[in-house]
Image 1 (tube, rainbow, N blue to C red):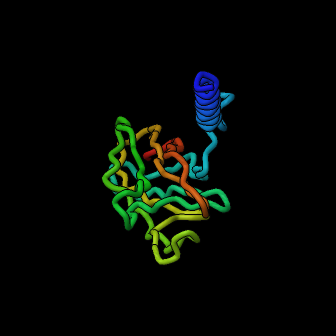
Image 2 (cartoon, rainbow, N blue to C red):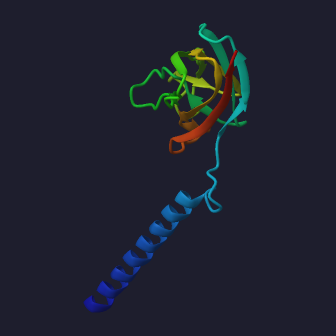
Image 3 (cartoon, helix red, strand yellow):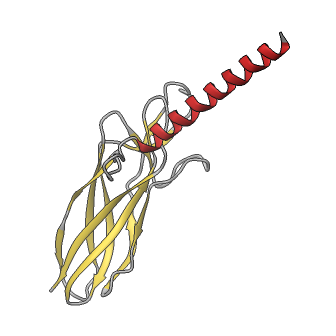
Length: 168
């Protein structure tokens, strides 16, 4: 009897472990089956911008968060939350001095109505302060964010940002 019970328990454990692993693999491959990651935020524009060579300029970068979702602002109110960040490569001939992020809007999740989070939803704009040498430059960056819906948060992602910057 003990042997049968041991076999049943071991079998149940193995099935549970197999199910957990299969769910984890399915979750990790969600939206990635064809080499593309499902993004919750899109870079809208500009694809190209013209600035005056050698002069400080502002380039506005427009993004949209998918409906029903929000992302933490650049300055979330809790240290445990992942802030939205723009990670800029080091383009030759372009200096990105700073990036201004909008103030987040206040959001209280349904499961914790007393908590006030600072988030972005819908469309939002970042303002990059740049100076560029004369010529054409490709500025590549990535917007790192963590998207959440009303019930849960998803793993952090990075949406690519590429802007052709022409300095005249």
